[in-house]
Image (cartoon, rainbow, N blue to C red; front, side, top):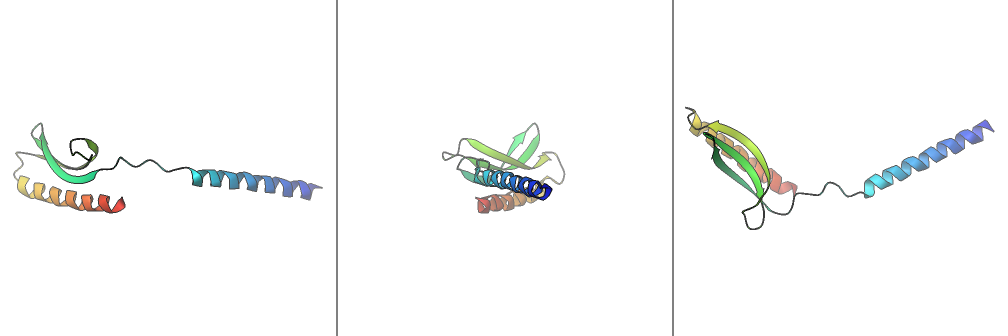
Length: 101
């Protein structure tokens, strides 16, 4: 009798586990950020140049998502090298984001 109860318990646990796995698989994942286009960009904020990759909406005016690559002080003696390196990184990141969509 104990063996039968054990088998029923294991069977019930298996059914519950199966139901949970099926429910998780059928759930939609996180919704993606709205459709748009990735762009490498830069702008100045309080004496620092911020190099970013951002996703803009169809009209190009609305920023849907933004990833900061670097912030460079405008008076940094190595500004040109740092800026060019950050922009190259931003372009690479843009390409990666585009391939993921």
